Length: 260
Image (cartoon, rainbow, N blue to C red; front, side, top):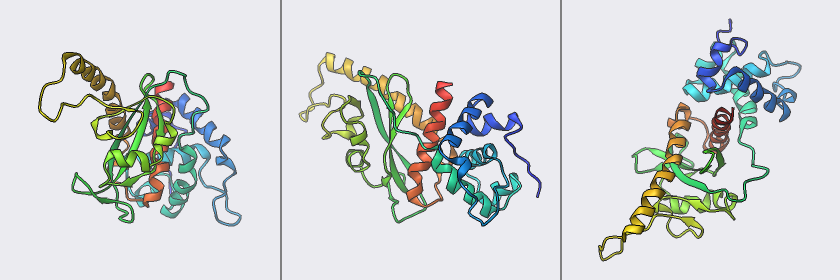
């Protein structure tokens, strides 16, 4: 079985990872430091057929294209079972690492996105009329880097509830957090001013602050759109409990592409 895609050919790297070859080498070093080279294939006395760089690229191809593993495996000259073992072992090593330190004046923006998910043990029918999960994502308002990804919640949960139950509220505790009006009721979350129930218009100064709030909050929408360029987040066929690691891995690649 011949190999079609290889990390040794730089032309394959950017289309499937969004990274330059130099950034990709840094990514492979990070995976190696996290133990990627020490993970065995899972078969007695059988080494990996692919080098670590090719295994990292395989995961990126799978996430970027959302091809089935029966389609991805032959592109790398391996069986679909071997491709499955690569995704299961390397994927979690790409997950976004918790920040060791943060700026004192860091402001975060949080929002939820619906990820169509086949695993109905977690997914529920949502407002997009598909079985989905609610994925909460937070970014740094200044750098636009993803700082946290919450545990996926059923798609019929509103953002106000998913924010608390996903655990992302604990990660963001102690820092200002901006969000849309759907997060009303969560202490410490900055939401736009709402029009009074009697229908009277907001004062001009509140309208101006709402406009600024919308312009800043748009950054999380842009981030979620870029993350969904990884087509696996448009139709998630794997088990729902793996979604957080997948989303965190995509967030890590997104951050690496931004920071250079």
